[in-house]
Length: 227
Image: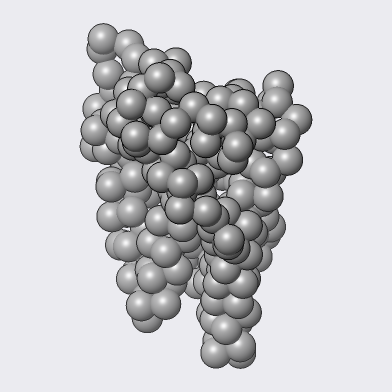
């Protein structure tokens, strides 16, 4: 049963990951790829509001005519780059959780691993990444073209996290009272939600935040006596 559930989760992760890569990379023209990579680099170091078409063209060395040959407008290039960057985050998150479930041999192993994942994913230095995710999602809400692509990537992450929690349920480590899809949404909610504390001058104790999340995992999702 454990082997079958593990294969099921891996299939969910890898099949969807492959689909995402094909959608974003298959047949990408070298010039188009250069424009996207340049825009991504600027997004990572500045922020969407500070990235201009002139910046992208100057750094990439691509002409304005080539930009409009590959994209309807500069906004489409920005959307593409933001989706690509978000997808890169999705792959990182899936890989971390998949490796954790694959290596865990007990309830204690997975709880210890989840604590380490929480520490690394909630680090104050990742504030820019959290801000990017919130801003990208907010932008997609008002942009039909961007929302359609983001919806696929967002669902891919939720489904992958849900599939991995289902493995833990099948192994007898996690409660079956909570639907795996709910857990997939919860993980993302507290990960992005950390952005609320990134702005005030007075911050909460990060160790106490990790302790709270770890306690929720232990008491609610991985209780000693399963319900």
